[in-house]
Image (cartoon, rainbow, N blue to C red; front, side):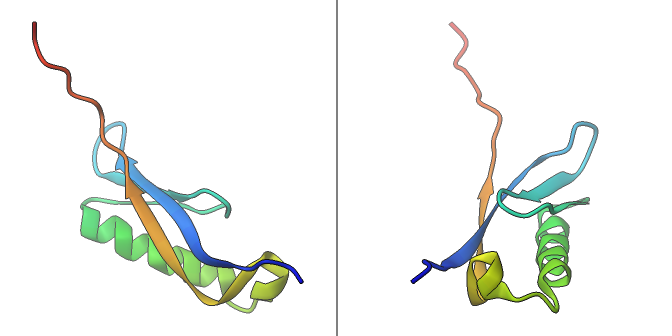
Length: 80
């Protein structure tokens, strides 16, 4: 029996010029928003639209998988 994933993994990071970018690791989804709330909302909508009408089992997911989002931070180093 095929193991089905219960979640879609995504990352959010700061855009190069402004705002935030969200992208999924396993799915070809990239979106953006001017705030963290906006990019999360846009990411959820993009995932929904990408999966709408698809056979999730064939794609390796359970019905209604959750989304796990990681926020990527730039490192800050102490001044010596």
